[in-house]
Length: 358
View 1 (tube, one colour):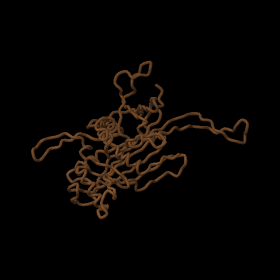
View 2 (view 1 turned 90 degrees about the horizontal axis):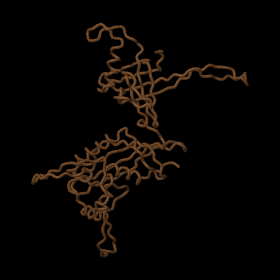
View 3 (view 1 turned 135 degrees about the horizontal axis):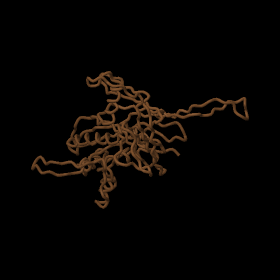
View 4 (view 1 turned 180 degrees about the vertical axis):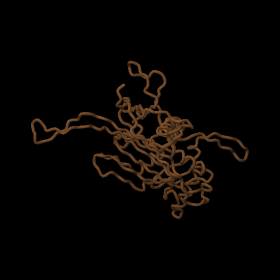
């Protein structure tokens, strides 16, 4: 069965991101401990007397999320006289008067791009959040939306669907945009702003974070008889934009024994090629690659004539996946650096298996 995300499901996900379990905390009157990993403490200063108060950011914003419609107070017509029926606008006004400090957010599903397959459960949901919020809170909301966007960028999230299955999802939050100029309502001076979001998921899928890549240009670690590292590890990490691994089998064509009219293949050797692409970050491993790249073919280094070098440069790569660790000793096959005016530097390195016999 494919995962079904209704507008209510999407609203619950967005509400949990912004408010944590604030709703349960308030309903239980504090019996359920408040937990919101995305929020933080802020300092409120009273402009009249200068008193300071520390308050949770999500509690201060006090945003109530809803979809389709939100009716805060319901009045039955039969409770009124025949000539005293509330209009929709009057009902809305009276509802707002009850909670002057509450802000509201309408969560909508704008579109959904699904994968046309019965055995691949994947989709991208595009949505929009429209906020009705007090003008004095807008800067805090802008900061909070930006903080949430940065916290979820490229970080896979585990979401349980209606069938109880855990799916991997990426959530991208857009920037806050200005929809309507400030106007006076029963909430005071208010603004209408909005932010788009995108939720992409794939059931039973591995992501980038499930495979850990470490590289050493200073040799392999020292291990005890049980495979545990002795002392400090020599391996370093760096942000990699793309990594590709390819096992290459060398095979020979032979006629099959039972059917000489058919040709079969027998593998005689195996090699692995690895390519890593990354930005020139100011990090230890990246700077080591930079020094290695520029010094490889240099005639002089810091004014001194370079000595003859061994072109077989060992690179140790450690991969951790599915609870196991794999170490490869490679030689650099090629290195490339792309410098573009008005853009960031991009480097890549390709390695292949080490062939020297020690």
